[in-house]
Image (cartoon, rainbow, N blue to C red; front, top):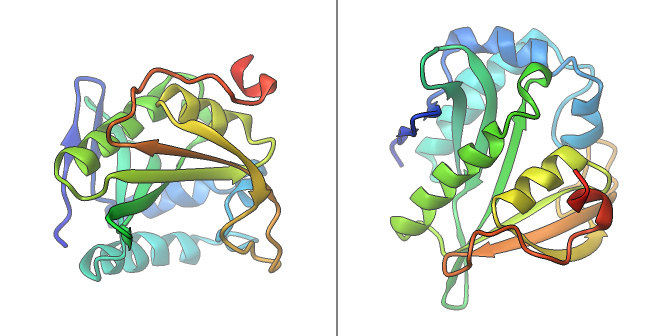
Length: 197
């Protein structure tokens, strides 16, 4: 699959570049990153960031495995974060993807990830790439949960993480789903601490 660029007046989602590795490295020194990102090596080195930016991401696009975008302000080239959408797996008649995202600490709390999700979901649904998207995070990751809720995801409960963490465990995780036909209004049913933010 060839990379796709997405944009709005607020954001531009484009390809990670080699010079983004330094920012990825810096952002991933934040102590919340290894706590909440399942596959993040720890300690996280600049070589890990370089491998992610120049190796994993382009290879995953090319292999039709995962679509990953750099999140940037529409008026700047600075990397703010990353968002990805897995290539869908057919489940009966449905094409089901999963979404993942993170922002550097300085860029959180401004609604940027809600907008980035909107762009990715609109693209995924309008092109027929997928018709269902799943989201999950470690229970207690309020920032991620609030962004997912505001993007319209419907909470489906708590259970073991679908992806094994670096220590091999599957910690308790909040889970949610969004269908192409769903209303994107933040739904009821989320844990109270998520709604309260």
